[in-house]
Length: 532
Image (cartoon, rainbow, N blue to C red; front, side, top):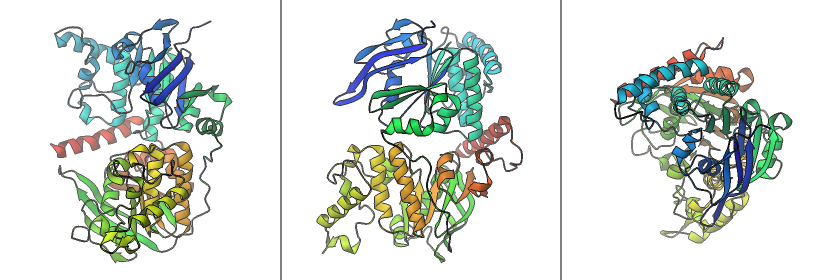
């Protein structure tokens, strides 16, 4: 019988009192794409970090191609034929592709022979695996999709036969993700073994041969992908049945609540991030903003939420609001009925060392019902916090616990409870389920739909197209600080939206990946030039 490419036997790892991995065993067969899924904190990344030598297991064995290996660091992993492509790329931005590929793998003190060797190897690898990239291009001028190709080339240049990819599509357009999958299929045909860590069940079903499910540090199941379903995998991840489809009635939109015209914002480096954005959101509807991260969505939310200034016009219920004066801050926005769930809950939504009850009132602490003379009524705030935590199923339901001690999903619920329970006219919500477990995703989606059905206007920003399609009544697509188009979910698909996300406005026919690459590279080159 063929030996597994990777076999982990009884792997355990603890960080203090937290048992990250508990007696995990898994076999990955050669020439296959093996998916690993699980909720946040399930132990997936810890397990792969042990395999790649970042962590040392407390117990257990690692076998590679039938031989036991002592992988003490990443160099040992590379020597064993294991490469890893991280979610956040490990590239030197002002180095060329060629320089990044040989970095740490030089043949000697003189770089010229190493560069010549790498150039020839890259040409061969690019042709063999559809990994075309300009070897002399600076990393900072490459699209995210091309940077990911460089990471894969780095691993292949080091003769990796086993590739670990951690959330590889998180920053890619759908077209780039499709291209990546073709690359992975090509690697598989050549006998390479792929381990794919992802939270996207659709990708697991589309690309993997086998999938392993982790829950609370343990391996709960390994199944053939063809013999399972997204619903079954979700249940294995959470331990209960999960509704993957958003159950909502057709929208009954009313009058425009939020109107934006010609909104412009230039950042501190002189880069124009919003370039004349115009949109509107009506009562009782969800407008989803789709786009690859970094194309102006964050700035749009920040301007609307009163965090940064801009030029242009914003009207709420027909009345123009201040964009640059003393009434342009977040407090003034809240007074106008705008609630804001920011994209980054750790830096913008919560003060992590503070208690849950304190975090449930930030921004609304001057409300009359929460005052006791000149002081805040802490007893009333704590009682309200407890009620919010009970209704939003925050676990543990302890208002006195510091926010940093809650899981990501429960932290997000605290932020949502604070904003939604103030009965806003408009909810700005950025990446509502980023880093959130699948069970909490179901709850958060239901709350957003409930608010819509109460006649509120929702502006939703998400990089997850599945989420955009599931929740939105209309979809607008942003690229390079502009609205590229607007579609009804029923009249479009992921291919068309993916092209719009890459700046391709003629979406009648599917554009080749090269067209998308050129658009993305041109955008990033413009930003680099403005920054300089």
